[in-house]
Length: 125
Image (cartoon, rainbow, N blue to C red; front, side, top):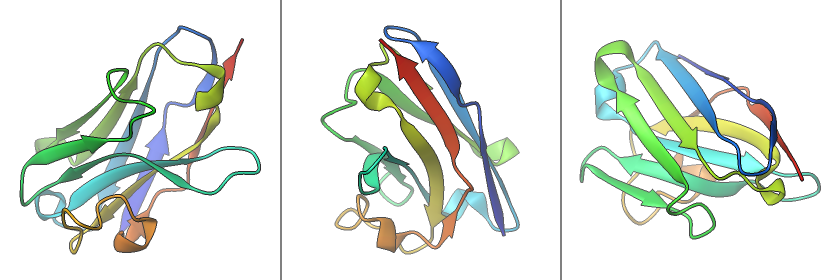
């Protein structure tokens, strides 16, 4: 089982980035997908998650309207489109997957069984 996140980099405030998450070794269709981030000196926080059972996507208030999660089940890929980036979005971003994620624990890192290695996003002011 492997998740590989990529696409991070340095961008100016107001810019955009698209992160990718490549999954392998499990049935991607049957798993919920989440994106989390961890900024300098901060705890890992929920960004967005897709609950496969309810076919619903949830966003944290801090990124709602700016970030979009997308899935390509045919190619076992997930994406995080990030627009209108702000300096406070600077963090290492992680994709995660889990078969036991439900609506009540979608935002909890502990609900996810598999994690990618993280990709660094730096937003300059």
